[in-house]
Length: 409
Image (cartoon, rainbow, N blue to C red; front, side):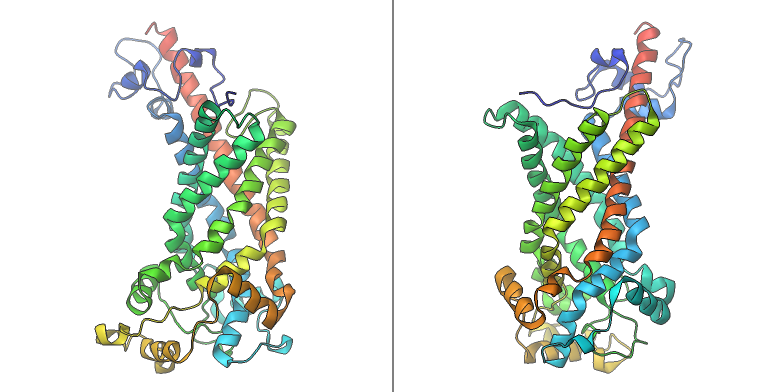
């Protein structure tokens, strides 16, 4: 079975497939804007699009979508992370099973008010750096591998003769690749988002660290916890592949039903109808995926925000001790606390049992309302930006090929 691929709308595109090198790519790279004596010059976008293959266009569109998504939804991501992580800090700092009366962050609006009161606008965008650093490669890798995997499974796997099965396994392969590459960035992002201002008077919601920036977090994590700290929560993150395995096959199915076009494809016609189709497909697919797979996010957050002990850190890096203004929260104090207590969360199953025993099943859905309000616009922004960029790149490529063909090349 051959999987339908994104192609420009111009008939001339049949003569110059976008996935292979063509003579027009050589012409497009020429410094002359008008192709010698020919009458119709190529625009910069047409020149750029003609010189790029399908994978390059998918990577660019995916990275742009991820960047816009992170920028738009960072405050909601901060709120969600604090709601997910606070139960672990209360038990870790107090040594007792947390009670409902000790909850610091309550609901989306209550958490937002507390962050704004104690940290201001900066607190709402805490962790924006690693979000941008993370989303750019995540979606660039994801969309590229997803497209290549669909091609491979369609052409080489005779047993995968159903388009939905092909999309499912392609999303698994793409998700695994992007997760392995970017997990360290997401650990740093979670650490930065879960910490609080030094002005915060509650000890229960305070993690045992304070990082000034993305680079500062990476340095201190490596010095005090070792390289493995950057891969905390990798197992539930890989388990979270079930999320994209639900979301993107569902999106492709729904978009095809609503618009008649696959992901990354567009056709000339009613733009408003196409817009509504993409919007409906992206919202419904994200709600389906988030509802089905949310508990793994809480487990992943708890593992990522739990420090690893590294007893030799203070001996190997003595100059690191004075890193914080408040000695009670300095690296030396952190190392002493880490030595004194065994890690509470050990692996996926143990973490699940610990949270269930200490906080009940509701803890697995902490921050889910906020997550829905964050995840749906995040997914919609990512997909809309991806579709928008792919549409314009495909159109520019088709126009460029048409100009070259009409000029007699």
